[in-house]
Length: 412
Length: 115
Image (cartoon, rainbow over the protein chains, first blue to last red):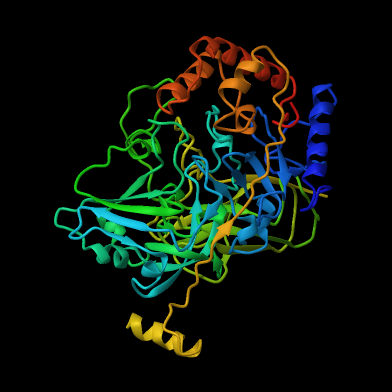
């Protein structure tokens, strides 16, 4: 990057120049490929079918290294796939960011309160120290993945945030159990769900606030947290400082940031982001279908990625080949990863297990490359026996992509 | 159990019984969106009605969709998200995105910043 961390002015002139060049017909581009391609001048090609596929790559966000920019305000930033080859824990400065509504940019810690109310015995308003004192401090390694991760690869394409596959990350989260915070108020009989709200609110009256709820049995799990720590540091503001909900195994839409309200519900949640959006069809649908039944998107399916090689990379004929990547089991432990495609079905070796809901390394050594490896992919299976599919079931919001992600390698 | 842990940490930290986590005030400054809306029919209507809530980038990154889809997106912003869009501006807003996407179609890699 030419602009570094310092000069907004430099970045401004660079991007503007780029816009002017392209606007003048200067941007002659190759067809998108399946892998990400650094194309110079602070841009990255996400390989989205049909485009637009190029995004700015910038380190200009506070506390962030180079991130793929989908939206500046409110921020939506994607992790470049190259980061996932570096380890199973995603560094805070490369972790994806997604806000639905404008985010507050300032937190007064002493003034912050978390209201716990609804179907409770005694509503309480808790300080941050009250939260930290609510119970044992717990560490959980868990993947935080946007429900729409990979939406940009949907075919037919669907509107919405056009993510590549980098709207995911794995961190060590530190906090107290949600159930210990709930105990400060006492959950009343008949509790069905627990709903969360944060400090991010709509800019216009009457628009739906981004509030989300989970069933009471999920809320009472030992690993569902009210977290303040991310990889041994305070949660960065972009990730929800001072507190966010952590629901290991579930998509990040439930991991409400800048937590300010916890509300126990006795019935269904009819709020917009539960009842109307973040929902998936209960049976396969086509783009022509209308009026089908849907349910909230909740638990994550298994996924895996080859991170050692880009699509189209050249490999040495007659030589051994080391392939590696990362995989996740979703809402259950990862059971196995196989390399499939090109007539192969080879079990991969798994790296250290850092927790049921984290990434695991996988690796595979092929003793001798005897030809091109076309359309190979890693295929993860979790402990519930759920395996990544060869074809992606289409849904109108492009949620929960987990098809086997394939690349082709050229031997020479 | 928990209180023991806190007291222990407190002792180690110097006979202070505060919890071992410190919440400080925090503030950040977010960058401006450097993406410029490319010229096109209806551009002014987009500037006036859309950019108060979100910066241009995402608008310019959408896949090729028909005019009716842009009409439904603008309708959703008004009805669901209560965006204060001038009704008379709706055709101009839709015209703009149809035109921008037509230009993008000639440059499939083309990005928000590059359009």
